[in-house]
Length: 281
Image (cartoon, rainbow, N blue to C red):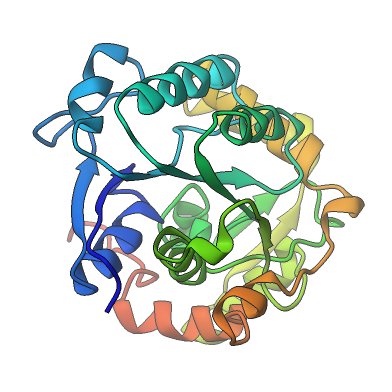
């Protein structure tokens, strides 16, 4: 039986955070959800909320919104880490982005904090197609994206959560950086075909230029910060050097990572990709 810990899960209602929190609770751990809607509240944009969220916590799972690559992220991580040290936290586990140089600056801040640490560097999530920005095009039946030549080793959010829980509860992982990927790489057109096959729907893929994609996003009046991040991810992360597949999930968990087909077949059963009929929303 592992010792019961007080663990703060930042972004505890997000893609990985809610999965990590539920797994920790199942294992009998004491979990505090770090979220604006919780009590005590936690808000990255309001450092005055950090102290109360950290009070009495022994370990913290850090996820940063919207991404560690955005301007100001390293300042926030530095301030939060310093506050965690003063609050008596013993261990930090940071979710980072594979291939993001800016995110690596944040990793260094955590490593140099004087606390125990583990870095979990993840590739793009499978769940981006069912819980995030690529869901709407899937529902519409037409995906138009740039950089279709990019091969991405998509990783499943459930695998990330399993790794995070293991490294939070097991000191043998202290001081390690793990790169998490799926077992193979896929292009956007291959992903679209996988989902089309799983759903039995005809989902079309059209390759477009970055300029066309930006114009399309601007039509939706998306915030400038969001546009900046999408451009950064497409230009800096979707590169050949970042298509490397790692075996770190198997190393940590003793099992193979989830394949995209497995993820797609499971997602279909939730009904998330069922198109919404006009007039029945």
